[in-house]
Amino acid sequence: MTLTLVLLRHGQSLGNAEGVFTGWQDVPLTELGLAQAVRAGELLRDAGLLPDLVHTSLRRRAITTANLALDACDRHWIPVARSWRLNERHYGALQGKDKRRVREQYGDEAFMAWRRSYGVAPPPEEPSGERAPDGGAAPDGVPSARPADEPEGHGEALRDVVVRALPYWTDAIVPDLRSGRVVLVAAHGNSIRALLKYIDHISDEAIAALEIPNGVPLRYDLDEATLEPVARTYLDAVEAERQVAAAALIGR
Ligand SMILES: O=C(O)[C@@H](CO)OP(=O)(O)O
Image 1 (cartoon, rainbow, N blue to C red):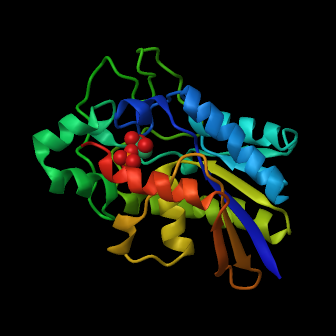
Image 2 (cartoon, rainbow, N blue to C red; image 1 turned 90 degrees about the vertical axis):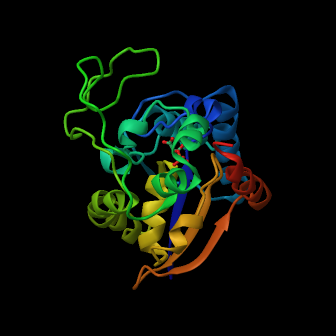
């Protein structure tokens, strides 16, 4: 017997479209992102892969994506759980900064180490009275109240994301999987990379090459006893591959 997990990175966000480091900032989906979210639900419906419950981060790009996808496959009513532990990696001082400018200023090596290495954390935020303490203000400057159980964010290496996401995997997601239900996790590029680092035993070096496309459901069949992956499938492999290839151009 296998257990069924579906991982879904949010559709294209405003930060993605503008080439800006987003992290814990709470940005909306673009028109393309909204369409990708609906398409994700249609893919789930067409594959007969209907989630029984959903876990999301606390950011609207993941929550909106889950809502639209679930509506498109008539699973809008399923139970939902949310946690800051599924949030995007906190990008420290880089949040809100233009990726191309950061790459030009600090060079390719630092740019890629901050974005894709396992152990290198982005530079810490400068203390400033004008920003929300969690960097959670939307780009238009409207502050967003921090959810009650969300700690103040600091720049995180992917390693830090693994450390804070794993308790949620073990205590919240795994029990739902073990109950035999199809579990959807709607999250972010780097929080999904963190989960896959653990689930797929990806080495610290190899994780640098892993890119997660926007809005393409990724199905994992896990061995019931060991939780080892038996199969992994993007529901639209062509679109996933197209986006992964395009990711090489981010910041260029
Ligand atoms: O800006 C971010 O928060 C992330 C995800 O969009 O960017 P990157 O892909 O560079 O890690």
